[in-house]
Image (cartoon, rainbow, N blue to C red; front, side, top):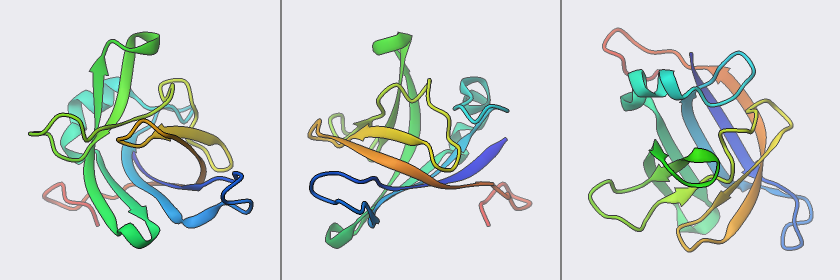
Length: 134
């Protein structure tokens, strides 16, 4: 089942309180335990979207992709331009993490710098008649 997931930047040296001005909104399939569901992603990948919001830099729109290989046998990534390699952001062991409120995940930006985010919201995604998000 597809879910809307909101991540906010977790506490760090630079942001001792964390920040809701930096984060992601992700539409992705989760299994009953809150983990990314590769099989459902394969069937519904055209609905798996990502919006990155980054304070004064504005936002970027991308898609959630699953690529074979990498640590653990596969890699979940955010791809902002599928026609141009090199702008992807990789998740750190996202196949192992549970996307439930209060949990933490790490995503590397396109320069390879890792940032830790807290899951602040997970809700079922509603799709309209034509399969569009509402």
